[in-house]
Length: 427
Image (cartoon, rainbow, N blue to C red; front, side):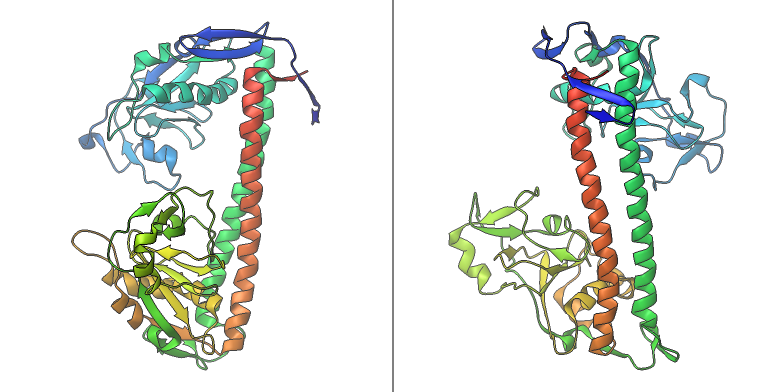
């Protein structure tokens, strides 16, 4: 196999190494070393909330590693240089979210619960970055804490990584970094397409196609030819399941919760039994639910709890039951296009209306009564269909790019395992 100017071959001559219950099959000239011996691990500074400022150097907390949009706290005082992080530094979070990161967001200061990892002289930083994911699988068996998961520094002595010669480390890192760059490029393309689609939704759902005259209504400015109607006027039924907890079963009719529903692409819902979170309802309770909640292809699911206000077009003939956290909407197809309605329900036009009704003392939710009273912009049916077609094309593009990303991630996982154990080698 050849990638770029690198050639690969399968290693036939492996040795077996067993340490502390962990087994490694690696090339004969490779070693296995303790994770603690691969680098220096510098824990971040123990800031308290009174140290946080509105300016200065950003403080890297775990949420800043997991979410690029998370806000920073800042520190403007003197601090030891060992806590300073620069672009390209290797970071290892050991509490709450256990993972590895290459820092890329400018000079900052490291908070506690994160190690700055400084590799030893015979170890390539980027090889170590990938090898640390192997070590995490070992450390997961030693995680402590029921609420705040973490491992202790001493446990770095109990995890091991394969160690090829430095030149081979560099080649392995180069291959895996090239896959990561491809994934990053797809991520950027997805983000760009999602921004364009969001902008188009705002434009098309408030200005329509080719209109010159507009009027001000309670939901905002819309084309003069459009109407504003209550949600119940363009639906045949808005209903949820009985408010009871059914008996669960290992098989049978799928029982769909909000968490399972929102795992699907933006516009569509279907039954994918490979997705985590799908449960099944027992025969004892089935009849109670099916009398009330009878979804069909073309109907809409609308979340009421947890993440309220998310709409999905049902795109499956397979029978399922929804929990009482999910509303079932049966549109009047003579008045409104189902896909147009999904885009409208997911837009700011509706989100602004549900926010005042979505807070209770114990949880975030909206009720069927509130959903029925939502105000919906109603273009003529042919224009609804054109708007839905335009937005649907962007969703299809986004889904294709997401599928490409998933394929790259699967390839990376497979190649990474083969390269880091030496079963696949770089010439």
